[in-house]
Length: 494
Image (tube, rainbow, N blue to C red; front, side, top):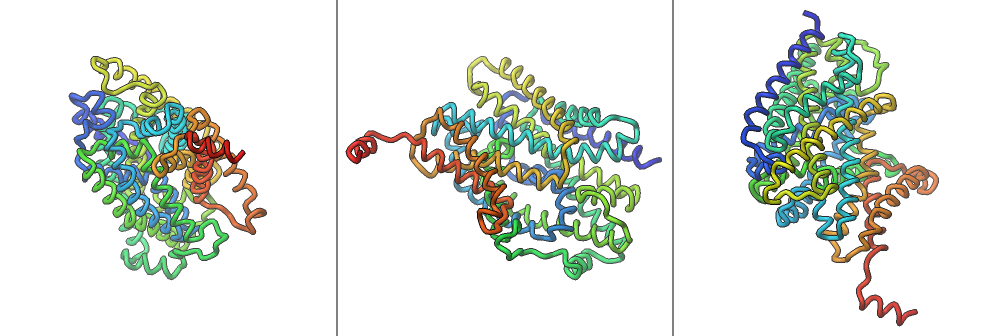
């Protein structure tokens, strides 16, 4: 049996297993099940499943390939992740649970007004549409190149099939289904990682400890970049990781919707802290995998004349043998599905509650709300297919780099809005919030474009997010509403 045929059979078997999980979990579900899992999700199940959702196909492919250029410096970002999870656990989650939120952007309505809520939601929708599409593109492209292209299937049809599968198994049960399917997918992804390590060790004739020693000897484990002007300067990496976690988890409806499905604030906090701790060793394994792949390629005389994102798939499929290619694809598909399903559900939730202004507790409104979320769910899926087809023509660098660069612009206003709302008691002119949210990313882009000339050689990395958030915070202060005492003092001064 040829490798594409074998992988196709495994792919179909995996999809069947997902639909079985979906069928069991989606029985007797309602709108509360779809949006917040009836707030009955066990925290340890959510935490374990969120490993796969947090990592996704980006980590599975891009981070191993990235090691050749950046060594282990990405680990400083991961260390920052943990401290970001502390902020989520002790600052954001108490607010979300106290207000009993379904969409976290409802907080902005409570704090500033409807325009701020819609602005925050629109920036999330833009951010998550791009981010989810990037993650899916990485996987769909690999599936297309190594499986469906073999059968003469065009790329758009591969993208259509992939998104239809996700849509069908998640549209009814929503978060209640996703919490449980994510556990299945995390298990397959981590199993594929461990088995791949074993196979590489077998081919090189060394055990995992030996792989680590080789990685150290060959210079792949450099952790700290000490040049402050470098875009991977270790302090920039650390604080960038911290703020990336705060915005891409704590201020992201996709990730928070799973947390809000837990039974209580205490359970949600256990989930977040456990996830933050688990991501450190898991990311170390992915970095070590990248070093091991480069070691194998160098020892085998393989010429690496292809993009870094193709390192893992090319070696697994073309050099490790049929079993390795099957294991690689199982892990890849698991990683992709675990991030994509939640994204579509979260985008649907935010559109329904924040943009369209629907309520979740209107009496007798169960059936109309269900019809609306079905329609939005399928509409979001269609948008993602379109973006994937468009992105195929413009992708020219490592996906993880593109993802975080774009997030530095689109998540910055969310960081500014929530920080201003939480840490000040100041009211703002709600109608002017969209202006601030648009100007801050534009100024950030200009500063980044000319940073070398203006800042004595300084190059921005992921910390663009922090700058963007700070500019958004400053903009909100400039459009603050002054109370009568302030206005009287200003009149006297004039």
